[in-house]
Amino acid sequence: MIVVAALLILREAYFGFQSPKPLDAPWQGLAVNGLASLMNAAWSWVLVRQGRRHKSPALVADGRHLLTDVISSIGVIGGVALAALTGWAVLDPALAVAVALGILWSGWGLMKESLGGLMDEAVPPETLARIREIISANADGAIEAHDLRTRHAGRMMFIDFHLVVPSGMSVAAAHGICDRLEHAIKAEFPDALISIHVEPDDQAKHSGIVVM
Image (tube, rainbow, N blue to C red; front, side, top):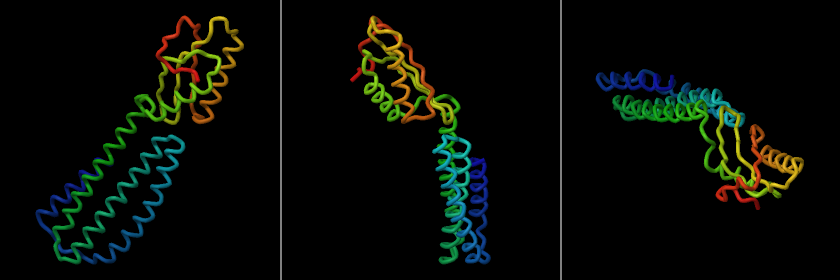
């Protein structure tokens, strides 16, 4: 819908270049448009903020879609104001083109972000680094962790890794380390689903996460 809106704006801008028209009651229109833009901007901020907080692509998409309306309105306000002050009717379609290109860029970013969630994309590098730090700091008694894999789908994060422990360690002790790791990870990433595969020390790769 965002892309369609941008294409329609470009279409109207083209006709505006072909036959510029004088503006009718520009200042009244600017006042109404400005008030509506402020309301839409506030609601867009709420939707995007809550969508990111709850990891909901639908809410973020709705907020971004509303934000494109705000961007369009800003372009309209600027174009109408300049056209009214200068008498250059061609300024209105010129700024409409700039607004449409901005909307297309925003739409591309939104599509990329949404597809990443649908395709079970890996977590961002900074999040992965933080997970590695948590494992290293809370796996006391183990030897190393390796083959760490992550992905996210919507608000859920999936974390999977292998934990190498001494061969003589009891099942209860190894289970205690896993519980400690799960609690530490979930303390920072509450929506994480964690799978830990316990292995004996002869499976160590000496290239994974070193336990502090």
